[in-house]
Length: 314
Image (tube, rainbow, N blue to C red):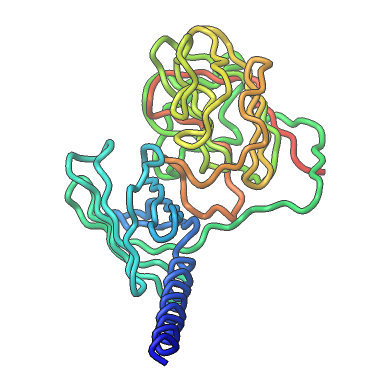
């Protein structure tokens, strides 16, 4: 009789343990995934991004992208009773740890980010869209985005600010660090082709839909990296370093369909049909489901672009 009672108690304990684990798993599933965030910074809304993943059975980890910089690993994401909390070391914006604290209610994230600059910012977020395409995309003929004569079809990233970019002899020039430059037309899926040239040590970037930066940086002779030439900044590492020496023209061919990107530079395919997880630092916004412009980074150094054209789905 005693053995039967012991077995019964064991079965009951195992049942409640299984039920507890099930509830915990259900709770974790509510936060696991990718989140597009809008952060209230003084008089503007800054984009940010969060991914939460399961490591093993019960530990949550992740990645976080602030309004600038690269995707940063989170060693542990604490989540219980709808409260999400984590801390990561500083990167570019101060010298203290960044602390993220929020609540998940009805599928929405709300809370406060205490930045590495010791300033608190409120945020709201929602799940990032999948951006899956169910049909084959066929592209039409190329059309120019830059007429080689003036800035028609382009604007400063901030409409109320004057741009330092100029057009001269078929070249779109950024003579000194200043504002980013956006196409006035916005796009979803496309094939983009352009040529870029920069002086030694300079840095720029090509933002797809204004949200995903393909890095343009003097990286000749270096090993490929997720933050160097040709990378989708902080996320996707090229399979080889395709950069020519500074001062030479370099040809980019970029295809973006949903989240899937292919990058070919100087005749070499260095990223092939890879998924971009989320927005990169410096994005115009976090509204990934909307069309966006082609944006050329102009706040990091001198750079020149020419022969900019785009092909759109037929």
